[in-house]
Length: 128
Image (tube, rainbow, N blue to C red; front, top):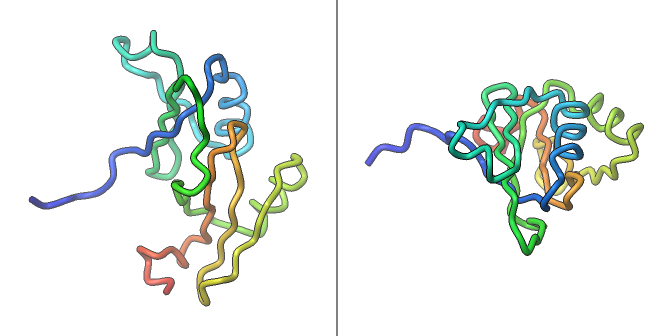
């Protein structure tokens, strides 16, 4: 077996939360919404893509947010991203526990944990 990469990361969301997901992932994070395939569209949820990363949000009932497991997204300017998120009222938790890795944690509108990492500092980029 030869793993080539990650196709997408799936996060859960509550029923009827598509508007909040679009406002956060497309509006605030700047990801583009990707159309779901017709056989999956009736299930609800929505998909987003940006910079080679694709996130799928699927409806899960009963819903429980992922508070530990999380995607880590590379950002071009972590300082600007943190400022924009804070200005939008999103709590930002800077994490300096790993020397050489500039990152922070936020939560999406459903309480799912999201890590933002400065491009070039990522764990897969030799940032440690």
